[in-house]
Length: 175
Length: 452
Image 1 (tube, rainbow over the protein chains, first blue to last red):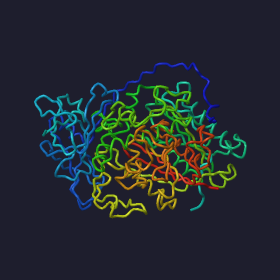
Image 2 (cartoon, rainbow over the protein chains, first blue to last red):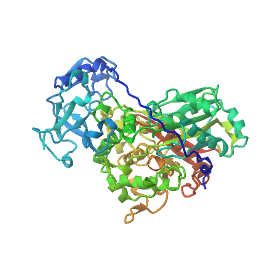
Image 3 (tube, rainbow over the protein chains, first blue to last red):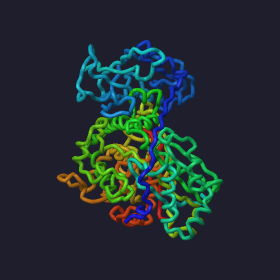
């Protein structure tokens, strides 16, 4: 017998009431707003810090998600690069059959981390989604999704005030 | 190094999917009473309470609780005004960081006896809303809006972990079997059918076949690969060593404390070849040639866990954890992350976490381990409490539940508290408690040792 038994509550009739809670935030994307405006314009933008001699791995760093400031050399990052047509691969993936409340109606969906070829990928493995059955695009089965697979960005049509990271998604660029 | 800090008493509630019988402060009181009245303290528990000169309150989510400044309610309800107190929050590592804050209060001399109180009540919203609240502890500009939530983040990391090292779903499933079945001997555990608050349909022993055929949550993680969500509280009493010896015959010394961090977003984890060596994260028993070609940490390893372990081992004088530690309670949020954490803690080489779980005698036909609380590498016990997979994950309480469990192991009091001696590690002298947040953004490690 555990000493815990003597602490078991005798309350069998707790009163449960409803407490609704709803909030609209007016959120700023700050200095990385160009990334989100880029999504609206159907462009995938990252930004690059070229102070490689000051970086831990000695390389230029691509930021995707972008950053306004380099965490390694603390320089302001001003150079945006257009990656819409870059060679992008799957770094890792998962297909979700459950989700948080907002996304529950979308299951199953596939989350990926991307791998932009030609850059060090330390800061650029952006999390996004892969759509495998988009009409007019290459369609594949869930079991065929694989690490290293070539993918390309696509963009949802949404009003500017509704743009967020989900405006961007990817589709297979090879079988 | 001056005074040492000891853990001398602890308490926890029954854990359950829902504890609607009690409010948060009532749950903390349940655990606090147990800490003061059941831990064989040598003077009157209420006199001990009067000696407490600092408290820490740890809880994770303002969204779950729908109450800011909850620390004020807790310390008021338990009766600790007007002494110093702070609320600590650090995602899944909230409990571990709370303990560290309590340790620092004593170590600094600001207090000599500190009660660390952690809790969470996750049941007042639906499970999918709860997952969303937890997902708010990921980057809400970039990761959450694409449908991100924690099981999926860990699943994507598990996919990469399997790809890098050849880990299998069966090895992951074994972790669930070990921890869930351990929990069947822990009276506090949410999945123990003897727990009066347990949901009977999701309680009881499981086999590897149950895990592998449970509902897919996010490939490759299935329902039984994923931790619980719980209501509950846990508290730990920390003392300056000299006070500790006045209050108990069995002080457990905090021999080592470590804390490491990593990026919020998995996207931003370095992929440096030989990064483990370049970041000076080798443990004393490891050889550089093991890891010269290994990308680190990537999405397969938790650099924060390794940093925390290295710091704690250095302070505790641990040269080889597998040889010097008897029992571990680690943050098994997912079966994959327990295997990954074996490696971060240096219990297995990187890439060999699967081999460590395979080292315990397993009955393939029945799909269960041959022993209760199986020994890994014929040496070490991991998550005898049942961990987050079998016992609980009431976020702000979790790290405290783990450390208190390790303390009771060292004190030989498992039967008294768990209600069964099957999980008591014989002659446990030194243990480790590991608390972990985010996708590995914040980790604490405590090394606890017998102080008598």
